[in-house]
Image (cartoon, rainbow, N blue to C red; front, side, top):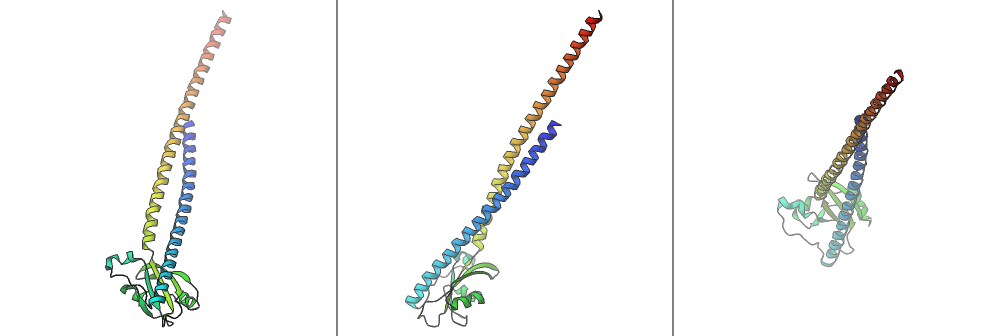
Length: 216
């Protein structure tokens, strides 16, 4: 009975700690994702400001050197200039000439507002910033800066797996400790029961001896 009680307490403790660890891991993971997205947004904003200044000074944006298609995702910053109709008139990479267009964000940029959104392009998730071009840049109307989310997703998965592995290691250690504690408590209880039985047996023998003495 004592052993079953110890095991039950150990199981309950392990389940409670497991639920708490899962909640902590999910909370930390969501926080990490938000931080990484904030960093991407800040990077998009910085790229937008640099390219807008370059466009204002030179009349064209800075172009990237030719990149191998296999490393295309690693560029992770694609910039295009659109006219008022949405057509691309400039791009910082040849591959960006078919960059997707979000009509709602584009209209906001035409109205002078900067907007960040997400979409799909070439089968991959992208984070995109739309903003107005500087005044006096000719047919240019909107700057669009895009970043692939694949590196973010890969990094977040690696961190999540490490978090889960750490949580499982902690849970395993605690389970082992609680199991040993339960076993120790069970052994102690068994020993107490044994000593108690021996004491009762001794008392019984003593009473029998006393009765025998009285009869005599």
